Image (tube, rainbow, N blue to C red):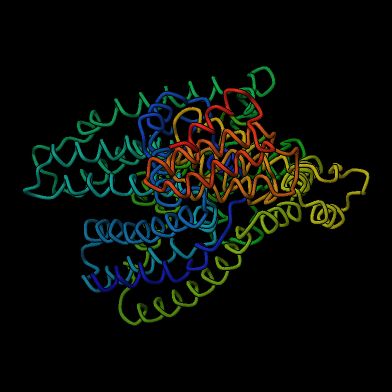
Length: 589
């Protein structure tokens, strides 16, 4: 068993090995990480914001923000740390899927034998890990929220199943499961429907005929009622109280109950069949933007979902196992089917937890195979896994950078308005980074005319650099130098010759007592560059501050040379009487 778990971890890691070299992309990574005015390493300010501001994202995800904060503490605003964290979570979660499926097989397929149970669990876990649907959560830096939530959810189910074991500390394990369930929802509320899965596990456990006297189906659910209710209320409050940036959920008059249910049913049917044929995937599928244009698909979906649900209710006694899997899959999908969203995009990441149910279903089906059929099943499984792995590698590639992901979105968008919106975003991304040539090339590739491209004034500072500088100044004023350093670094990465940014970074180094770095950036600030020159008085004040740093660190010679430099900047005397007095007093030390 341990060797199989190790195999799952190694294969999952090797499959996504290139992700650590990916960049941030212009799909929420800017809002969540790069331009987030609240994010920083773990601190009192960061934690206070994470737990008190549900409107920034339209979801209440304090532990998700804490996850970003922990990565920030190690990696700053470099994408490497966030992608490495996603790879680690993917490996951990694939191993947890293996463990969970194996526990289910040992409970509900006991006659399959230990070795075959382990083989089935290995195939199922690898199928989950190598599926192209996982590419979005692994290759996208913001997918960290889903990886964290999924990890806590899988641990919660394992703790819940552990409570069934004879001799286990039942209440202790139930408490652990409830805490992990709450943690999963507070990372991202995609696991709200997990409570329904716990109820279904109760039913399955009671049917297994060996329930202990302490166990009563439903009694254990009291442990999960409070976290479910609290997080649901917080999620609805965050959704309906979101800032104008995100927009409010559609009103009932504009998007009625019937339309909402049709949209949910169509998405549900999509997630029933698409995992078995994962081709043509895109981060922004547009086929549900206008329900009227896909009436036939909506009707077919209603028939599939309605008929399937009816069969699972009518044939409950005959197909109990299939019915439990059907409803478990539905419970996990329910929060992600867009009941309060318009337009809604059926993204791959929404199937993250529901895919575990499909993996369990495959394993339980394989466990019924006997004799030589097992050899054929293993051979067929290897072929399927190879195909999934190849498709996932291709899908991962579209998350390498903004150009790759936008190219896929634009190519797959069959809704004209959505396509035009993402073409504009793509071009604007390069314009705001000060890359007019690249913006023009993207516009030409997407079929835009030159007149439609926003002009960039010669010698101007890129908007993205200006935003980073403003964030750096805000963080510096609030006493958060680590965050300020990161934004100064990015601002000057986009505009290396920007005098103002270099000056303020030198000022930050001087205020932090790092004289040599301050002097280095001062030299950059006064060199010919972009933007207005730094005023003489500002130059002298900065040099005086740097000299004080040198005096404080017993570098008197270097301090005096810095003062002399300041006096030369003013033509031999200070630009202001008080500044002149200060400089000459320093020189007389």
